[in-house]
Amino acid sequence: MRIGRIISNERIVTVIFKGTKAYDATMIFDISEEHLERDFFKAFTENEPADSSFKDTYIISKIDSYLSPLKYPGQIRDFYAFEDHVKNSRRRRGLDMEPEWYKIPAYYFTSNSGLIPHGGSFKYPNFTEELDFEMEIGIIIGQSGKDISEEEAFNHIFGMVLMNDWSARDLQRREMKIGLGPSKSKDFATGIGDCIVTLKDLKPLLKNGKFDIPVETQINGHLFGESNLKRIYWPIEKLISYASMSSQLKAGDIIMTGTMPGGCITEMPQEKPRWIQKNDEVLMQSPILGNLLNKVI
Image (tube, rainbow, N blue to C red; front, side, top):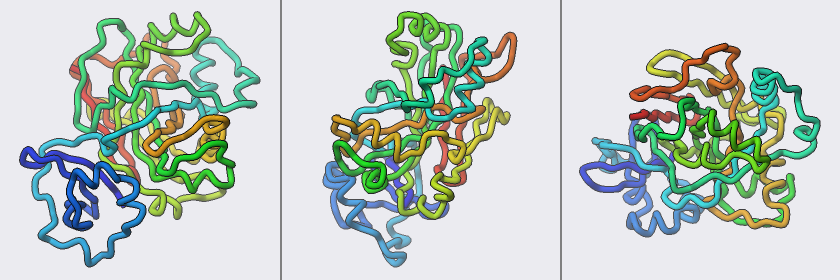
């Protein structure tokens, strides 16, 4: 299933996308929107609608705007899981790979209060002159757990969603010198895509232990870069298992993969890169995971 939340005629509606059409999930499940939002994971994991459930009378004919497909996001852990991205970014700064990177899948916590939905905009931060984006995928935890084994990790995944980890690179460089990791440089906006695709629909894309999910980024309508989740170094089940060591993962938590190779300006070998400016639009899209368009104003 592809699940989203939208505003239609001043009404918040949880929808199931099927093809090019959006269907009112409350009509399909015969429950209220309040009930569906409150018991989101239970409702969608216990109810697999048959094709006959998608009636024409349930189609939402008008989408005014998109909301975050996850109304109650939990903690967000952002990993650093693509070797090629790390190599490229460090090489641009004249640095070799840190051997410790290959020993543990490092991550940091980012805010869950600044999610910008597909089609949403945000103000250019006044503390940066080097605004960058990061093309990522978020893994939505649907079942709580602690000390989750790698073998059991997939049982805790609800689905995946496109995400954009907006970053202030000049401030980030200053923060990293302190030794505590990034903070305000990433604590102002995080884009989240138009839909969550459930794990059941993604499993056929699992090949040799990795998901074959292509993603591309465009800036103002021009292709910037293309990548694929299968290029990840640290397996997703390892990320989940590591994050849950002596720590409780809860339904609604998000595990972000980190930047996909070629998915940010910082990675590009340019002497004077063009950073994101006011009025720029950044679009991330995938034939599997949908779309994420954000505008900086």
